[in-house]
Amino acid sequence: MADALQVENIYKKVTLRLIPFLFICYLAAYLDRVNVGFAKLQMLSDLKFSETVYGLGAGIFFIGYFLFEVPSNILLEKIGPRVWIARIMITWGVLSSCMMFVSSETSYYILRFFLGVAEAGFFPGIILYLTYWYPQDRRGRIVALFMTAIAFSGVVGGPLSGWIMERFSGMYGLAGWKWLFLLEGLPSVILGVATFLYLDDTVLKAKWLSAEEKSYLQSRLDADAVSKVELPIAKIFTDARVWLFSGIYFFIVMGLYGIGFWLPNIIKAAGVTDVFHNGLLSAIPYFVAAVAMVLVGKNSDRTGERHWHMIILTLVGAAGFWLSSVFSNNIVIALLGITIAAVGVLSSIALSWSLPTAYLAGSAAAAGIAMINSIGNLSGFVSPFIVGWIKDATGSLSGGLYFLAASIAMGGVLVLCTKLLKPAKV
Image (cartoon, rainbow, N blue to C red; front, side, top):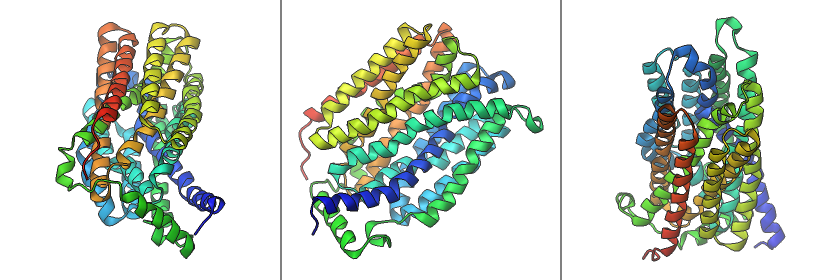
């Protein structure tokens, strides 16, 4: 039907329609998830919380997230992405804004837990949604492009969060951290309504595509599905390869939340005490990582190779954490180390989704992607809690950074295991 130029134009049309909007939605989601890292700079002293309390509350989000992730993704497949993603965004936006009412350890834990429940299913839902539009040989760069929202949440979120806390502090008698939760939560509600009005569930329902374009896109997806495994949902939980994918994601995401929750403290420990300057410096690792993610994803699609790309990236990430720990008192080298870690962590996370989405199809994909993401994001509970505990016990972040380096290196070991595993029998 189409020559190479026509094909590229069709996918460019799809990408311009979907990715910028999904990018903005994920940017809002990630800001609402990790802005507690900036709120911490004021909230802990105001509420008399210890580092351990902060770490436990930051991480308890992922317990709610874990419990409701698989059911949420199965419902998304049944109800449709447009309605279900809109529901997720509206409820998490409301709960994120309600974080301004935290006044005790109990209220902190409860709101963080229900914020996790509300957001469960968003990220794996989008990963699943992208498989409704793009074949496997295009998914590396597309997922990386979408996931640069994590990096840009750092580029935008750091300076924005610092500015809000400094500019609005004391206005109408509210602390800066309360304004932070309120002003960064409301956009998600607005985007939730926009999602319902803007997204199309599948290629065949897209009114902005011609009949010929729909036919071509669907034929590519149908051809792609032939090589996938259509497992019963119950067997997802006993499939060795799915468990390996889950382990890979768990250990790599450990590093992601180590950066997300502790980067402001790493910079502060190196001598930068002004919250706005802290936010500006926090943007640097994310900006560099955003560029690296897209370049790595594009190269992986071009070569068709996934495993060695990821193994090398995990080693790069581990080296970055090690460097920032050894030179924790030197702001230049510490920031360089975290930048290297961010490149390794974020690029390997984006690429990691090329493995399960090439393996699973149908309801198995919905449940499997959700399972991998939910288990992986349990590291969002483990990582801040353990790093916070190490910091309380030692008075330094260095031990926690060594822990994060070991975690992401372990992710690389598991990637190697999936490469050595015999192909599944379909």
